[in-house]
Length: 187
Length: 122
Image (tube, rainbow over all chains, first blue to last red; front, side, top):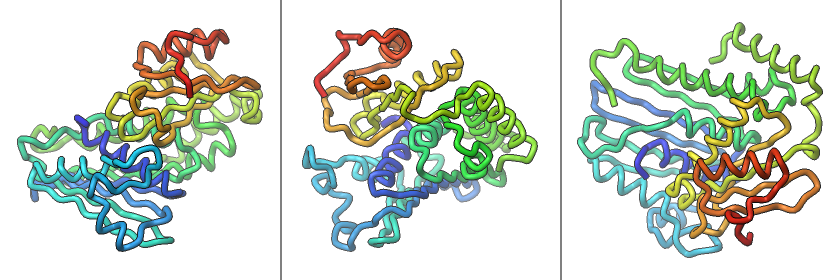
């Protein structure tokens, strides 16, 4: 994967497979502390302590078609290549949280990439999940919650072209605004 | 957070759709499913799905439902796109890049003709 946004998409898919009805994606870029933090939290079925302890092993997977699950090990390797960490917490019946930290300025840290594209894929492609997104860059913050949008739509599909445009623009404008007025260029 | 003003815009979109009777049941719509497992994502499935959404938005296509799903179990054929026209069997396409997605939209989704050269068993 060449973008963090693709790793985030991959982990969110795990949350969906775990039957989550609410998934939070939080990104925090703190240039003072030189940390990039990503949190993907769900209310899915969760994992036992035993499974949780073994989850970063590529040969541990819930897949039935093959014995290899690469998503978490790949993300962990990407983090560790940048003096970062991947931590997971989970409880059966409550959900799972994946937190990944990177040294923001690390030369090997892959770019965040097309995060609005990832969000659009998730929000429109999995409308039964309540999605929230919170992205902070230093003191700028953008919060997106699809619940008020779905309430307003009252049954109209998110795949309606006008609705799609609305969501896409809201995400792109919101994320773009995070990087305005920052002291130096951020990648 | 969406402002009151922007939610007003959304209400207008809903009213327009109501007038055009676009609130009808799922059963009358074409469904597209894009596989988004780890292998699919690495193979470019997000770009494939984005291309489909882009066409719907740009060409103002209604009555199409797009869903993404986890691993479909056909790793060597990712990205996978499945098309279900109302009342018809599911058709599975393999190795669908953005260009192929556009063709599938034009020929199969809009004109009803399966693009056989992209089709795989599934």
